[in-house]
Amino acid sequence: MRAWRGSSPLLLVVLAGLLVAGMVLAATMGYMRIPAADVLQLIRDRILGLDSSVDPVSAAVVLDVRLPRIIESVLVGGMLAVCGGVFQAILLNPLADPYTLGISSGAAFGASLVIVLQVFGLSLPQFISVPLFAFGGGVATLAVVLSLAAGDRRLSSTSLILSGVIVAAILSAAIGFLKFLADEQVGVIIFWLMGSLSGASWQDILVLVPVAVIGLLVVLLHGRDLNVMAIGERTAVTMGVDTVRLRRTLLVTCTLMASVCVAVAGIIGFVGLIVPHLLRSVIGPDNRWLLALSFFGGGLLLLFADTLTRAVLPAEVPIGVLTALIGGPFFCVIFKRKLRAE
Image (cartoon, rainbow, N blue to C red; front, side, top):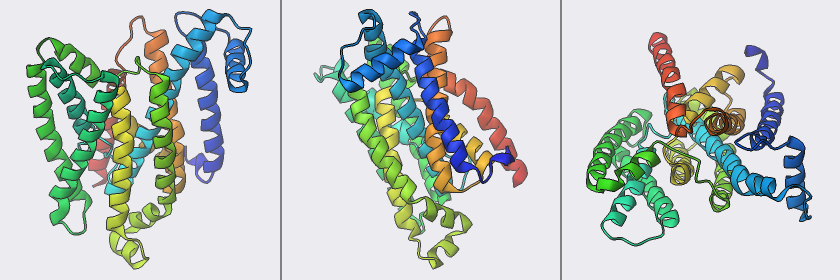
């Protein structure tokens, strides 16, 4: 794997190529098998605004059902992986991801809260209220975590992680209470907490694309500063890096990205843990390339997992369950290695 060190641009091209090929292949798979040539023709005709000669049923399946789900899986996986890479770089901890700071728990609490409120008579369109409450929950959780860690002027990684663990524990108990109140709707909350891309739509894509583009740009512009901070906080300060401002900027940016992902797809864990860690072992710790590669790697991983559960397994398994089954053992291996290294 060390052979790839110094070959980050080549690996970027390889991952981008695999991702495009994977998306086309995934669009052909499912209950109805559709040739790749038809998929490519449908996409070309839609982009150029032409009347397609492909069977209308196949066109509806590809354009209205499969493509939104495929694109959503790539965007959600890519953003979660980038967030994980940023958190690991900020906290200098390979076990960090959007869940370490309790952000995903906050978003889950917000979504569960609106579902329970609907049980008690609140009348709001679910496709708007759930994402908005999930987003609000993630942002509020970050505010609480930063407030708890504010006593530490340096905003150290230890303070942030401890604050995140405390807030996540409280939110987990609160979600349990909401499940109790939900009564017959508890199944909806449980299914949403397990994560799923089955409800993907073009409306979700319109929300995800600008967040992904802006978030990725902000993160990549700070890649060099993250590299300097990895040398040591004092060294970074002497080299002109405002570490507190850097942490706040990237934490807010990644909270927005992670909250939007949770809002549209529920809880999907471990993507942000696995992908940056694997890529770091392949190309090294240069965040300027690592974060860009994480987007393609995360998109590829979630696309593979979603295609597996949608088109290969006999029954659709919630995507969050599948990623947890893959990521749980991986988490244990990283934890053991970290203990040995210390």
